[in-house]
Image (tube, rainbow, N blue to C red):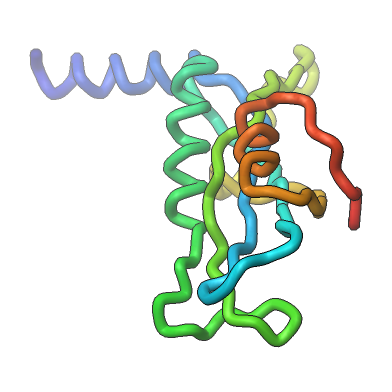
Length: 141
């Protein structure tokens, strides 16, 4: 394939991209000892992708890049040493664009546009929420 063909294919792929919001779940875990509950962040990222599967792949990459295992103990919550862990992608939502705003461009792709903060009792509830299952949560913010 010629360099021109590769560029044209790349331009065609970019023109077929669409916008998605990715709801990515993170949680705080104590480094030492047990914990009574888990504080969760659901961060919402704006992602440009070819399709839903591509958006989910990009969201997982963002989640893994943004977790902080705090191996040196620098991260604390309520005076306890914790890690900030990626739990999963809860959901991907198409962002509707209409003809008059379809030229919308966000820079950079993958920017966090919102977040929510929850609390649950167990790690299993964290992981269930990350899978998109229904879970009782304490909405914090």
